Image (cartoon, rainbow, N blue to C red):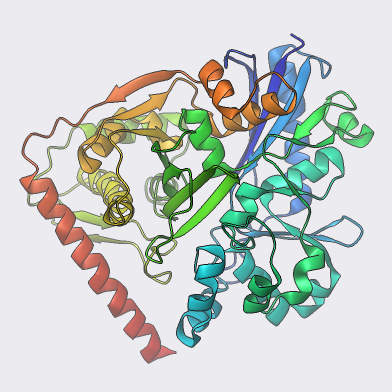
Length: 499
């Protein structure tokens, strides 16, 4: 057991630790829910100290579950939700953790769109500012919480906070820093002109050194070893932005491959060997010089089902989600079926849009409402994918990961909705597996990421489109998209009237 690889995956809620052997088999795992706080409307935060406590506990629990010792672990890799903002003070203490569901900077992002700042930024970093973007949040903190900004010693991302907890090293990797708008592309480096456009010239000293995702960022410290049960000196890879980790862990790591994540965020990404330059695409990121990703995404995916189960059904746990899948599978969609816009946390085009059930009639029940929710999530993924396709990007299959990929009903709806076969990997914890593959490269167990994927990733299920007549589904999609555009404009007008 001397070549086990540990992958850590920290989302907006759950922190997971998964231990793999070199074949990709799970030998132990543990997870813990974290707490988010919402101190003001639009603010979604977490305590970094609690994140560290939870990570330490799940690592120790994972080792116990595997019956393994810390010395059995060859290397560790981290993955975490992208964007948001994690600040340490100058002494390395936790200062502020903002999650990627936060919308406090919506007005600042709108201001920059209106005054031309967004147009200045796009050619530099291949994305425009948006509310949860790290760069935009850092500028918001500088403007609105100057006392916190002055105390900040390091600004980085969720998985970087875990790497710091394990190694004491304040570093980040290229995938996270390119994905959060703080790196110039295709130069792949921090840039004075870019920071100046954000009004963050003085933030350069707060940005950590960059380390390749599959390179060693540091080693486990004595304090981290006491907290986790890991062995002192175990190498820790710099790790991945979680959407890249999930893509790698699902088997998509080479140009031309597509990966869809059905999680808190709906991620739709195509891997390329060079950046795609088009302002209609949400953003780009890179993890090595010959690997770029064109990304279309928004917080409009399986988070809607979590909300429905918790808040509407008053339920929780795997059994509740299994019942939802059974209800959805019982519905035969028709022209009379209701629609759902999955905008609990805004939409891509309009951050202040809100979710809505539309076309609900007295004879519709939970099954029809849930089917509308599943369908609405697929439709919003399709809207993102259509923007990628409109820019000449094509693919003939996709890998599907995230919590939603555990639902066979949802997977089939994705295959039908986007019109290509979709594959789900054998390992459900694709984010942790992607991080573990990076750790394997860092430890010298694999030549590169592709070799790690070939050895550790296997498909489990495939779904091919079975809808022979797309007339109804295409008509419902067009209605969905038209209403989404109309309602976004109405929300914007309404807010301007009551402001």
